[in-house]
Amino acid sequence: MRRLIPIFVLFITMITLISCGGDDGPTGNGTPDPEITSLQPESGPPGTSVTIRGTGFQPEGEMSVLFGESLATIASATQDEIQTNVPEGISTGSVQVSVTVNEETASGPNFTVEAKAPGISSV
Image (cartoon, rainbow, N blue to C red; front, side, top):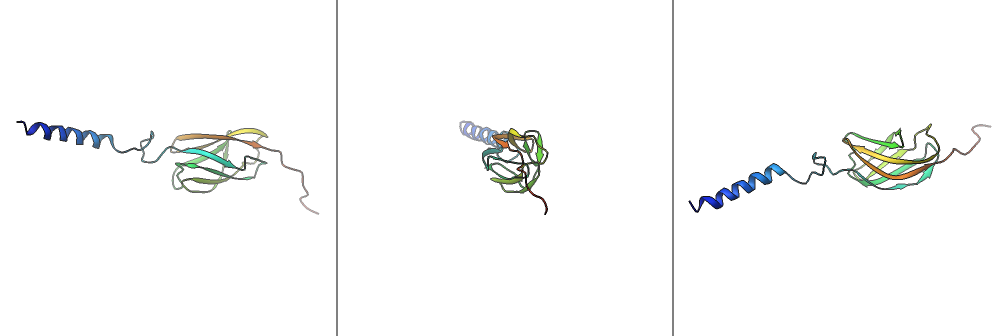
């Protein structure tokens, strides 16, 4: 009987560890939650190419980037970097950049949308 108690305790411990699983992050889907650490550049007119650096991005999964409420097109992505452009038609001013990966959203620093500089389109 005394031998059965340690075996029983070991069995319960193993069941508990298996049912808890690994550290999947709060999403529980095996990937860490997204986090934005920096934007480069931090300002520019619509169409500006922006690099978003961080962690937990998912290049082969469901992912989106917003500048304020405007959806941006993702040009390329890795697990720690996203290349995108400031959406056309967005209003000037400061907007928060956010990245959503599998329904988990990370809000990053603000991006300042500037007015397009006047230029010559043809001669």
